Length: 364
Image 1: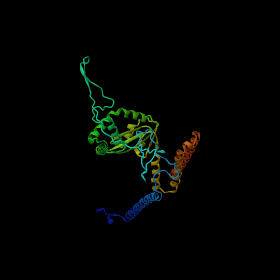
Image 2 (image 1 turned 90 degrees about the vertical axis):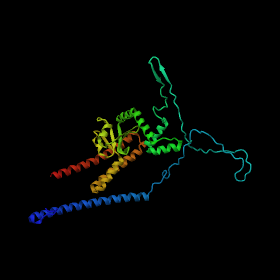
Image 3 (image 1 turned 120 degrees about the vertical axis):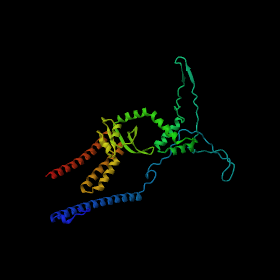
Image 4 (image 1 turned 135 degrees about the horizontal axis):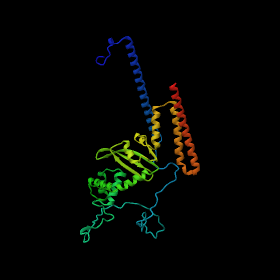
């Protein structure tokens, strides 16, 4: 070979024929791969266009569905003040009016502008003749140790930062606009850092309760810490939520949250880190449906389409049964669940039989 080219004079006729056949086969394989890739991309575009067309033809309208019983805002249980609105003269002809013949209530809710309350905790000091030292009075219940921001500000900062997802600069602007509180972004950040240390005892208690839960939902998402990429891991159930921020997105983080002998069910997506858990697993329905569609794009064979439709129908029936659960007695509900399980197992056995037959045929 010279400069990447085959020297024809160095090869015999048979070798050249073999080389031509090999290159022809490689060319055919590349052509098939290209056609398969183009077919998949075309299918993706078709599905994307179909979804977009569906949204245009059937746009999601705001509010309740047609025919839904009308709802009105619940009246407040407590009225803080009442404003009497009377008339002395007719607003149209200005004639003098007599006594009121009736009234109706117009209830309105509003927010009272907030203001900053400054509290001075005067801490008295005493000399103890028995200990022979100076002692200081204890912290008040609403006093934050070594902090210049009160508990209400800290609580609202936590809610705005971690529930509503506002950055520190927006929180600072919000406090200044609503109640004229001037505070720096650094002060808010340092205050939350101190709070994380104070709440470490509660964090461990939540972690222990999560580990004792019969089922846990787990997920992870990207999270910035001082501009550096981290991962926010969540382990939650219907009552509690445990969060952990880590540089790693590997399975070691999952194992640090759950004990090795955890016997419950972990509900997650198809991310491989959760596969390392030696426990029972349940895949999220939304991610399962997405995975099924993704596989449908790649494999449009008659066999896959058949079992795709069977599994999709079972999932739809299961979701429908969940919505109507209150309409059935517990005994009837268990019967319906048992039927769904048998349908799912029947389809699984059919697939296993096909795999076994293919394996036998390959061996033959």
